[in-house]
Length: 366
Image (cartoon, rainbow, N blue to C red; front, side, top):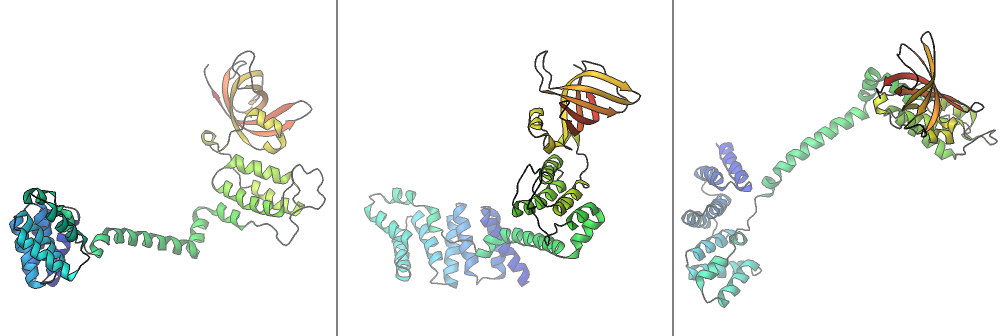
């Protein structure tokens, strides 16, 4: 029975908080029939009645509450508002006096008294009184915070599950079961007991500090995890052309074995021809998806080679010429507009040719 009574009160306060005052009165009245000595129920019944325009009900509940707790300032404040609306000014002033005796800092009551003294018309004064300033009683803290407590509890529970999952062998077992290549990649570490930088590098195109090389190793592994293939390849190439020590380069070289061709429709970075020509060695192994026109087409069985006029727009404008080699059955002809997906294999400096190992060709039907 006690639990049922408590439930009615909680539901009443919940509806009051949601400003569903009619439902609040219904549930709080049920709670009152079970416990007539709860001043809080009287208080919110009186407040809800006022907010629905039921002056008589509000007066009854505020008075009932004061019989249970005669010095309750909030109940007296609510009853004084009822007296104002009923133009029982003397009764309202009497209650205000009692309130100020108990709490001289009652700002709302002091302001109301001051305005009453300055007013010539009692009715206009009553109309200007702010109801909500007299109903300053707040919903109990727990009731107000209950929705947030529930959300917070769920969030904490989820966080604990995540922490337990990652902090225990469960995470490693899951990775080993579903993503064994990531576990293998994580197991590769730099030989920190050996020199990271070569004191006398030969032909190094880039110079890095020890910290830059160490951070690059971690960063490149993350790029591979996230399928940022071209970003990873370019970073690896720079390390291989740098002042890193031979043993460190061997560890970086192992990372190449974890790189698979990306989805041609979602390459993380599709470089322009002119970018590659600035540093061709850095772009070896990078994947490109270029459009252009076929020239110099040669076929020998399933082996096909041609020059791709990259980003050909008219007779005078091309971005560059890349030599494409591909194997497969394709119906191609000179001057055909195509889209090529392939991997940069090398740059032949003497011939001035950028070589691409083609993987897919799409006819653009232009």
